[in-house]
Length: 262
Image 1 (cartoon, rainbow, N blue to C red):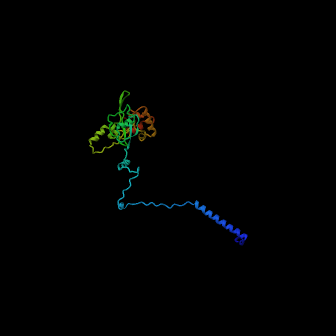
Image 2: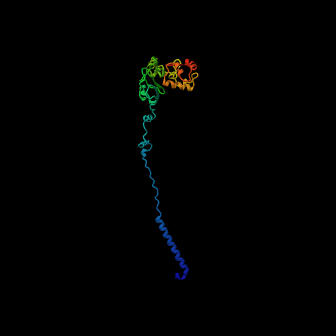
Image 3: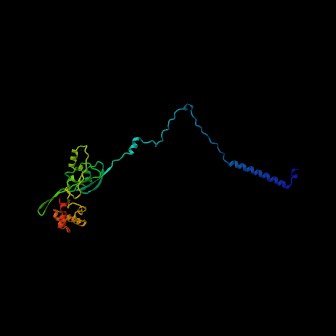
């Protein structure tokens, strides 16, 4: 009866609406299956005993490996290590030079560093047991020689150990320093200029060219000629300067009172 009352067009429209409803219902069902259900967060409550209320809480022990070092170990990290000293050695040793040694080293130690003494060494006034002083020079003197020149005995002296060393490095200086008493500070003697005698005269056999060229009438060239001459034939008298080319009687008389031969 109802189908007779509806037209053909109305019937088709009704079928379309029903189909759309079914499709929507199916889509909602599928979407509900795929959506994950969120689990509400679980709150964990820490139960606190009523008997512990007001009680002091003990600090947790330090983690393993984080224990601070003892106080004495920290101080040891900053402990200053012994310092080294630098001392030079010159004179009658096999390898003169400047050497680094441990604090508290002795004169014998630096002699050993320099490969020992040579055959011309004179250690009669050297205190081999003396402690070395940082920044100083130890000079081992050569033994004085006596040679014959034209039948005449000529003594070639050498500078004494006490003249070229700090007093602590010599036996005579050590004894005189000890005689002053422990309260008196030790002093380092200033040696005379190289090549100069105690009287201030320049020794033409040992003076460097820088001292020779300052003599009246002696410049760098003649100073070099003097050094070359004495290297072949050491001077035995001041008069032998006349044998050096360029030094005549006038120059010799001008410097006679300023030089010496030892």
